[in-house]
Image (cartoon, rainbow, N blue to C red; front, side):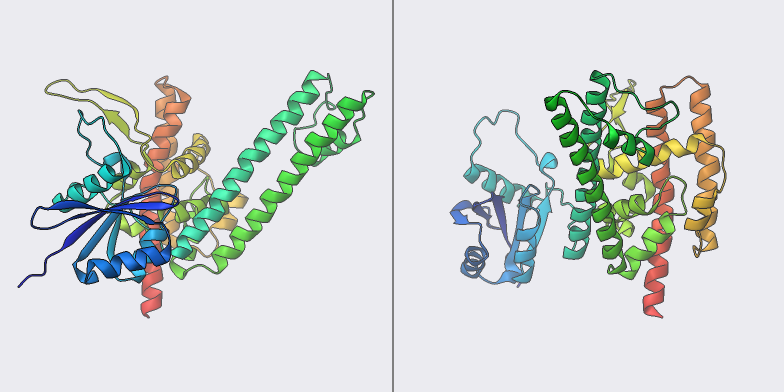
Length: 375
């Protein structure tokens, strides 16, 4: 006799979890609210019976994947659900934690929910580190803007030919002096913040390099091979690998493009075909990296000293893919530019196509790493 499966809907918050269960017989009931603590979760699972008969789900959110890992340790099959893909009735105007939990349990039982990929603890840790570095770069940019606009307002200009934020530029800022005490204090504060954030970025980049050395052989292989592509250096390659996790989980390049949110939206019906701007319903960190890398394909295909150094030790088939990418993407960039397209749309289109080459290289790198482990 087949065992009956009970479906749990969990509405998770920082301190509480609302629980509902959908029985296979059709009954749907709320089990109340428990504390979001490991001991409370353990007691709930023990109360509900054999773990083989439990299927749990909750929406992805700010609480992360801690609950998923806790349930996995207890032997419960759990899935994390994409919040934007949960079906919602148009006329529903009442929203509570209990109703949300019941709705999740009901939809989970009927198979109407879409699960997201859950990284392991190591992948999640590396992704947090990479995103911390990205936040530091954003803070550094804001600090630089504050300092440069302050100097602009006070009429300070560097010598002709001195580029911003070079060592010579920073030396000039350090040697500046203002007659007003308030302005001098402002200059020192802005300068200290720029220097502090520069050190923070360097510290995080060193931590990323050490984390990659301790990562799995498959991730190291992906990071090394992705750097064969033009416009993708070490930090960009680590960001792509950390955000994607296992690239082989994507069945094809088009699926990866959709995951990035760089595909055009569409509202077509009958004979009417209407396509709009990109959906942006995907991984924004991945999309930013590929769009930044796409700018380098406006240049003619070439292998400069920096790219040649990154390609040392990379398999020849990976180099061939990277070289093919240079020709194809440069040709596309030039063709769209000649057609008078907006530059932002051009780099978005080229970045979307670049994801196809990233997928091809990632698949080969993961396959090679698995073969080496099996040998």
